[in-house]
Length: 457
Figure 1: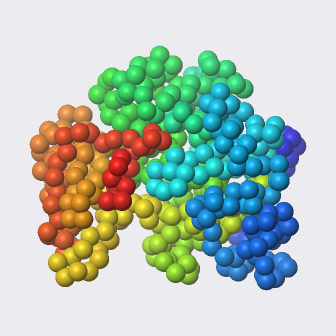
Figure 2: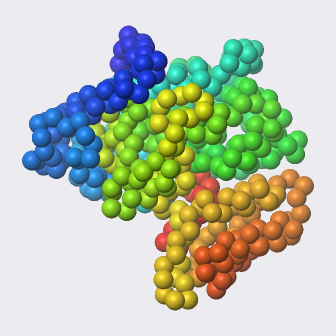
Figure 3: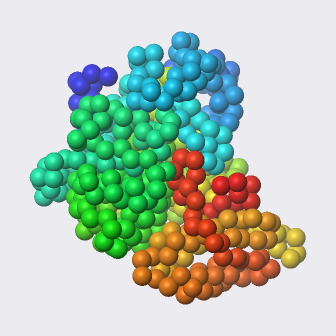
């Protein structure tokens, strides 16, 4: 998209936020109707799926639910451009030298590592990239005061991204394009899978003004900064990929003496939300429909934790994401957020895939989400990882905070985990201490909870 289109999108986003919820809802309805019409006109898959629906659809609940597994099987029928084929896309993403390049000279291709299920391949059009850029500018204006911007400028505007670099992952593609546009002296891209001392040394040499790591790596780097091994002074730390307990963000901010911001997004929808100072994430609902739902896909009321969430990306026309099961458990705020932002406010409580399920002594099934173990983060722990190794066994990997006594930390963590289990009638579940530290996934992230079906990590 041209710069004029970007400017128009930016102006529209600002205007929508000034005009309020009714104006935002009207944009959402109009854009949903438009992308549904485009999908059924140009995608054989959606033409078949939407057979029998009304000519104009403004209510997302009229649409069937989709998910990554079923869509990837029908990739060639799913896309709306007949020139896009899974064979050609595979050839493109199989070449690491093409990371950051445009597919067919007109699209952006992103992949996911499949940490929690089926790997995904997503094709984004220029409209999506322009919407993402416009909403990113809106986020930046909300995050940075004039003094913060001055700090970034006086420190050379240098930016470091720490992400998975071995594939066409979203952060790797963005990093490659930024380096091409601004040069290696302005943008540094480090591999999240590199040894921590190597990352620290590279950061000390580059001294970024903006630091953008995965959230779990941000926690590790805060520990290195507090210990004096890392010596950088970024004006802003932007975390991505995973959530942290509230105390985790505060520790990072204190260690770097910097603002810490984060967003909730996905490769399927790169512009989902951004945080506010009260710890809520505000959904860009002029460009995305986000539906918290239960197991039966019926709406979950505000104030109630959902089983999963459905998203409809209202920007991407080449590969429509419509009523797509993202797999995250969210809580929508039932009242206006005190920050004054009138966009819907949510908190993400973890993925449906990040739930431990056990059998009680009476044969009943009990599920415990990652949220229940977040208190562990406040016990002198820099990073923790709980693996379910058997139906009634857990293995806990710990990285104690700098200066903390490992044995005392383990005693406190063991006590807290067994207390949570006992509350759920699971006294028979054993909890063992792992010798190895938390392990990264192939995508460079640290999952806090790894259920039995995923313990290959």
